[in-house]
Length: 326
Image (cartoon, rainbow, N blue to C red; front, side, top):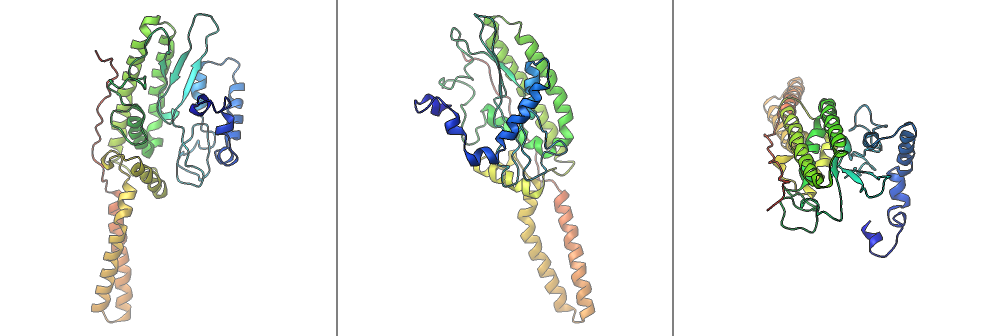
């Protein structure tokens, strides 16, 4: 809402609503779906709101499928209109009693289905944790940036979620159990805190999430040595392009099908050389056909080996330091 606060307008719709942007992202359909889910609940709480933001109505079977699947929880992928992704989620509990401040639950990371909502309080009488402030430069956590930063909350999460997305169907059930358990704990305890305890609880919450998501990355990394990615070649090529534009180091985010695709011209060249070699030495037509077929079989066998062979290495991201500096 920076444009609104700049004095140009107090109406965000004037800047963020356009024919192409709204229709290509199916904004109207997502709004209808949101209202539908809200109206289903006779009693509505903050956990219900978390779940609405994670809704995958049109992609329940496999999130990576489909060229036009648009959900409340947006997953970018290959396709003409699937270049948008949910980059952050926020749920605020507005108090009905005077002299109380809102409790904000923010992911500070993309993809709410693979993120955990953490409690934050913005109290004018108490300075917030330094890692939240964008003005405090003397802190352990860097501010948001357009390209990859190793000590930034959002970018570290991107490394984790993009690796997890390669094995989403395999990992999501266990992730959901752990995610929901931790969020329920945060919501329950955040209601019982005094004003002086809130900042420390926010710091502790971010630390716990950092530790848990590190385990998710470890599981995804282990699977990379056991099975092929669930993403198609087109999807991996799309994400590889975004990895390069974000300047993410290749060793932190490896797409095996892309690595194989890069070697494909070499394999084709070797196949052609092999065919020409055998044709030159075998003059009879029937022998030439046999050798060509044999060469193709050999080439397909080599390709299959390359596809199953992982090029991944162990990914080890250090935990972030959310503690206050002296």
